[in-house]
Amino acid sequence: MDNEQNRALNLALFGPPGSGKGTQASMLIEAFGFTHLAPGDLLREEIKTKTELGLKAEAVIAAGRLVSDDIIHGMLGRHIAAVLERGGRILLDGFPRTLGQFDFLEQFLAGRGSRMHGVFFLDLPTEELIGRLTGRRLCGQCGAVYHVQTLAPKVAGVCDVCGGALVQRKDDNRESIQGRLAAYEQQTFPVLKAFEAQGKLFRIKADQPREEVYAAIEDKVRALLEETAVGRRA
Ligand code: AP5
Ligand code: MG
View 1 (cartoon, protein in one colour):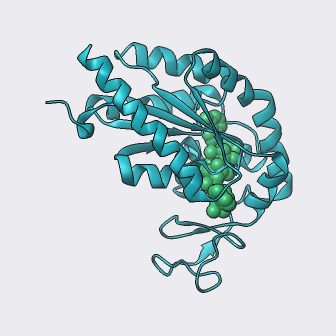
View 2 (cartoon, rainbow, N blue to C red):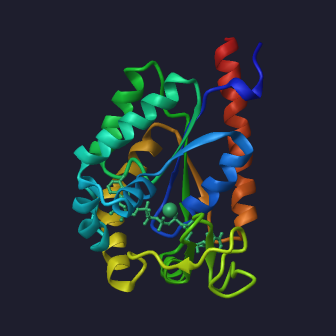
């Protein structure tokens, strides 16, 4: 029997650094049961545990450059395959970020009888991004995300959820941010055009409160779930 719980759905959150991809992902995961695949998070975990890959990636990330496609393809391919195999829903965050990654994803999904269903572009002016990134704080223990002005914890420097100490991401300084914004303009922006040409891109006004951004995305996710159900019945 077809019901909302068992419908496959592969989506991506797309947008410049600080546009709110991680924030929206955490809300969507809870509501729709997605598996969240974010190469930035996976790479930071590799750095934290000092793996060979982590040691290689650390300086690249600190400079705000992109890690090589080969590394990203290996890492993401494994995770995507595992989710598809168990019939789960995928929410990509920060991938694909180059045209090479876009082609890889298309072929990887097609080879497994699947495809992307929708991509949400979190659109907001560059001037707002810098304030969002420099003011961001994360819990070093549970990863909860705060902002010193727009989402401050009850006690400064302490996580509301688990009491852990809040820290700043190493690449949230002005120099790294300039590198990240340049990488976005030069290497990532063309991917937006590629999804747009496929008719899969939904532009979301992201310079509004978190809950309003979420409501706009949620509406589309429900519509996509309905469409995939119609596709399956047809
Ligand atoms: P990654 O971790 O993906 O970083 P990013 O793309 O630069 O994006 P961020 O995580 O900084 O921002 P976000 O959009 O998630 O915003 P958030 O929700 O936290 O990548 C890091 C690095 O890893 C890359 O530079 C690269 O080196 C490497 N890498 C990653 N993927 C790669 C790939 N595919 N290929 C190659 N290399 C790769 O929000 C930011 C702040 O704003 C928070 O404080 C939040 O509370 C606040 N906020 C969120 N929404 C709102 C709102 N609506 N109103 C007000 N404030 C808000
Ligand atoms: Mg993020």
